[in-house]
Amino acid sequence: MGLSVIDLIIIVLYLILAAVIGSLSGGKQKNIKDYFLGGTSVPWWAVAFSIVAAETSSLTFISIPGLAYLTNLNFLQLTIGFLTARVIIALVFLPAYKKGELKTAYAFLGERFGQRTQRFASIVFLFTRIAADGVRLFATAIPLAIILKAAPWFQDWSNFQIYLISIILIAIISLIYTYTGGMKGVIWADVLQMSIYVGGAIIALFILWRHLPADFSIPAEKWQVFNLDFGQSLADFFRKPYTLLGALIGGTFLSLASHGTDQLIVQRLLSTRSLKDSQKAIITSGVIIIFQFALFLVVGLLLYAFYHGISIASPDAPFHKPDEIFPYFIIHNLPFGIKGLIIAGLFAAAMSTLAGSMSSLSGSAMMDLYKPITKKNLSHKQELAVSRFFTILSGVILTGVALLFIKMSHSVVEIALGIASITYGGLLGVFLLGLLSQKVQEKAAIIAFTAGLLAMLSVSITPILLGQAPFVHWTWYVLIGSVVTIGVGLVSQWIIQKL
Image 1 (cartoon, rainbow, N blue to C red):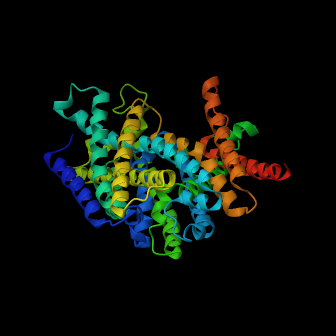
Image 2: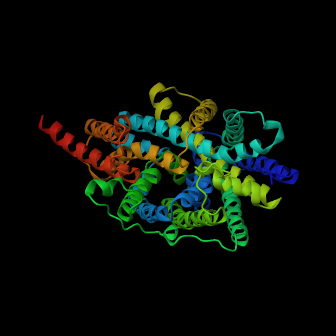
Image 3: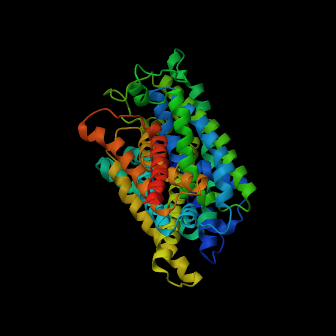
């Protein structure tokens, strides 16, 4: 059971509507503050919805149900840490960010340490965001690729060709309203998109429940939320995925880094009218995220029952990647009309992450690198032109990176979070040095930042080169990287003062 003409019309019209709303709601931008920060006039509740849409849209809709299908509800433990981190960000990070006229997260490091630290952090962010959101763009293309595979005129196309056209199409639509509407356009498009895709997920959950086989069964261990297994040794404990302590600590540090130091989220928080509005936005997003992850994890368990727990490795399985399970159900089992609406909501919501990434990449490239390095005295019109060029360049690079992940068989959400976690520890560590210590200066900060990055690269890459199992699970990456960065920073500053 594929897509009807009605479904296709709904999908096309919704994608056009999302692009139009994103473009028009951005208004006329007179300068780069309007373009990248929405003129600091966006309501806090809209920013809260936008944060949720940006961080979880494609990953939640596609990958989380597949993860629950393969495992259980242990992933939900991370969300407790996510909320804890947001409270810390509201109380510690945001007061420092909302002082003065900061336009990027890394401008804080420039004011606290110096421009070299700002540029270093911005470059690390650019590489991290490009890699992580390249994965997200690929995830967004999965349902569209499944649709194209089912169409008779694409029967002779290879898997790579189908994913290629899917990725390019989604990137172009996202680029249109990011280029024209700026950050304000991205945020208001997110508000519409989140309501649609969450509503679509609830509808899918209801239909799944109604169509479960009479003899369906979900093993009790699939409902397990808290993993109290501490392993047989200390090394075994750190390698185990999603243990309670690992998830709580890992989730807290991961969210501290992703929401406190990542321009993708900080850019949204800087677009509010006041510090209080930013604080309400970040904490509210943490509450919403718990319910949203729970919704999609339960969808995954019902999919397990619906397909009788068939293994993705089985030749009889209609899907062979965890990220294909929910999209396959939507396309082949939902009624006409509803199917088109849910897929349209998925595309639009997933594109919000991509659009936000393009805006944050171009914003950091413009304000952290181009302007400080060139020191050109450009008019507002010229600055806007350069910023929009960086937006286009970001879209092209993200598209190229997304193509590299086509042959991946692992869960997309774990790939994306694992990539980000490698660099987040160093970023978070240097931000904490700037916020909590007045003694550490730029030279020590750069040494510490470099040490944190090298430590996490060695932790993550060495086992691969040796053909061994990972030393630790990725949920511990940010904590380890932060501790190394802070420790090296304090020691380096002490040594510098003694010399």
